[in-house]
Image (tube, rainbow, N blue to C red; front, top):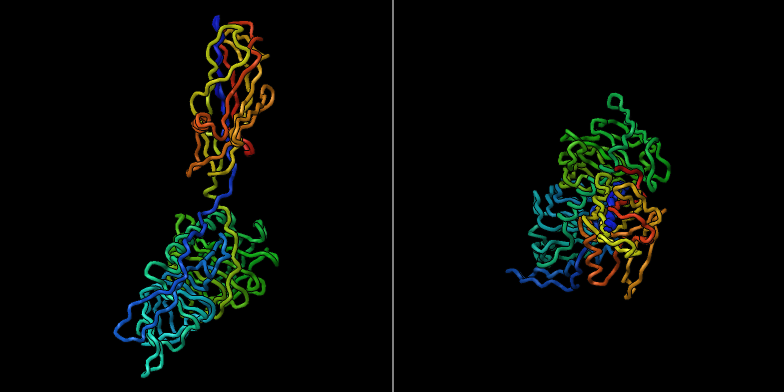
Length: 514
């Protein structure tokens, strides 16, 4: 960006600087605030008022998920990945779930076990087509509204909300009125954002797919680059169903994330798809997303495929996922609603992934405006050096807290309106810094080479006005600020209005534009 500096000499010398600026764009890494934050509640017991019968049990307080999963980082599945099924609603046929779950509402048909290993969480309600339920979990955590009663002399079975338990979890805990174990709605909202990020990251990685007459679906990912041993690729919902899935171009150590583009589709089915010898040995995540409209998929996923060998994942946080037919699934399912019409045979989980870059939301640094500098009007030979006054604005945008580097260079030396050059004038960028508690000054001479300005955007939107921040820091005698200085003014021998041109350029950018 070209901007000017002005210096009038009167019998006077007038000097102005025109600054030239260049806007550069550099890709920056960003994540969908996916940091988990919580206030850890006290590990107290919950005390409940007894109902009419005195067999109601006061259960230990649930605590918070952080008590049980303290090592979580900002990965794709994150907290939801600790549960084989994570959904708002579970609608279960008379088929067992060998793993664990977290859901708000459960609808049951039959008496098969809902959950076997690990910790499960039932937050809000349970319905059944009979008066029975079975939970074989290591630990079952109930929402605060549930009523748990001990076995009676007449039946010998304990109950949850009136449903008789054919089998009782080894450990029962319960939310208190002012604390939930985890917030399912918040986690599903995060997963919706994650699904979008994955789709954005994958949308240009279109795999070559061949599916002849509903037979073998062959996905060739040979040309797609690997990122930390993960290949992100996109296929279309219309590439399915088939009777076999084959994936080529994946090494033995690579995982696969397949975004299934469901644009214009409300119903997706795998058909009775088997995994071939290669694909059944891979950890595959299936992410469902409408790429054309950039929206989460809200339709149906009918999973009839049968794969028990490795742990995979289905990510459809706003969709309905049905495990049906001969379908079995090993790993994790994230859905708005999970319908279990067949056995969920395992408690193993998908090996989670680091969250990729959201390529639609890269925060590239931008130089929005560059300032002018006014050195005022002075008599000939009255000054040998001057500090200029900043004029206008110096605005940037980028990622909050991430350094932006700006180079300033002299594009054209002081020249009067009569064409006289002030070639012996030198230029300095002066940095004043109070960070150590006392003032330290650094000079960068940029008469022949560029000088460097470093700035860290501190506002939430990533924007910054350098002149405003410098003025504040100067007034408060804190942090750092910059000034522009010219020297050797006694070498100017002719009066006039002098103008120079500065060039402002972002550093480490792939290109420039004027």
